[in-house]
Length: 221
Figure 1: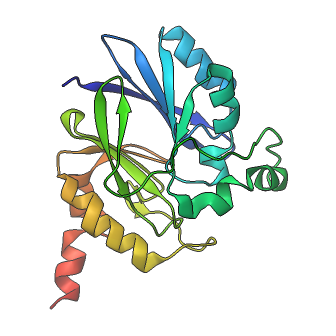
Figure 2: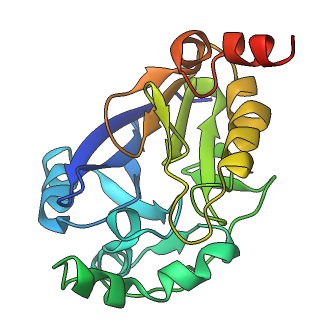
Figure 3: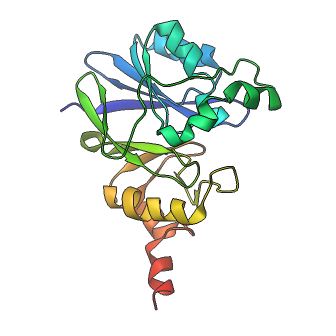
């Protein structure tokens, strides 16, 4: 199995981490969470000599999904994700965009809704899909075991977790998803969050004030 390469492209006024993953030998690529600033994303694809084959979406918030429809149309590729409980977000992106001055936002229905246990594929490489609600009800994350890489959207950040005060949010559900699905992926997994710097699961288990092992040890005493 090949090791996937990954690059982060910061987009939108929300400073969202759109990421591009690709196989180095074939240059076949996927874009994760193209929230906007498509000219920057498309220039990176062109500069690297990549061929875009898929668009993957972790969840339906504006900064992660507003550019998906246009990018898919430009490259004639499919959109996969999020989970169907985020349909209320992906179907109202244009309205969300008007509220934040992002007039290029477009509603979309993905070519494939994703569920727990599914896999997404990039040129033969399989990434496991985990449904991780809490930030949004239909949030999913992606894990490529061979690359020791996870793309976690707004579930987990370096030193923090996703906000849960937006429609459909739940702190209990979010913490449960992180503890039961994200952290067990392994301490050596590097993850790309939806905002801010990358980190490792091992680092968050040690230091993250929301999900560190010590926090749960203390609460059980």
